[in-house]
Length: 231
Image (cartoon, rainbow, N blue to C red; front, side):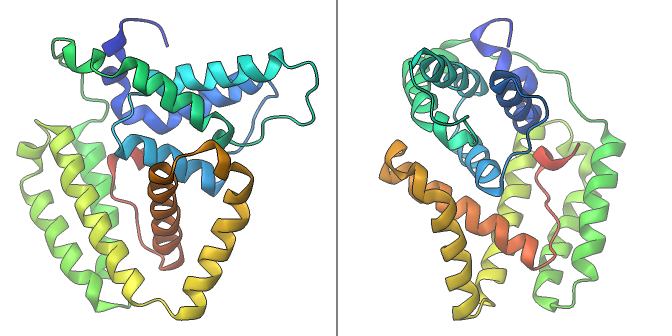
């Protein structure tokens, strides 16, 4: 990404798209679909406050290291291969983003785009067969009623929406059977096993939570509310 160290702020809500496209370009093999584990990893970076620039630099560094090897047994097929390099870049950049003067980024979505997106989520929650989610729909309705005000600070709006997603995940988690929980963790372990050595215990814990929460929301047929999914 071109520009200053704080340019990542301009693409804040394009975090997922920027990472996906950059990984595909670095891989150099055309269209490559990220796995559920990859998406959970990106979300864990975003939630941990890892600057987009650090993620993009980490991807480049990981591929440079891979290409410098004399023997390459396999192509890089997961973002998890880049996890260690991303954290190294984030540590190297620590304090740089905070030291920059704040920049006013243009709103990436129109008010009506956000309204339509959240209204679809509200409708899905209202129509969900489990009435436990109706309380989340009510909270979303309150946000929609004051959306013009929330539109002035999209990052704060994102925090509210993320909190609602966490509430949805908690409801879904409480409704899980032991067998469903076992199967979800079994799938997670199968995907994560090759990459455990590249991550710290803290990174693994955050990634596991993001992966399981994403699976929970998908299995329960629940909408995503985060603006990062507004495409």
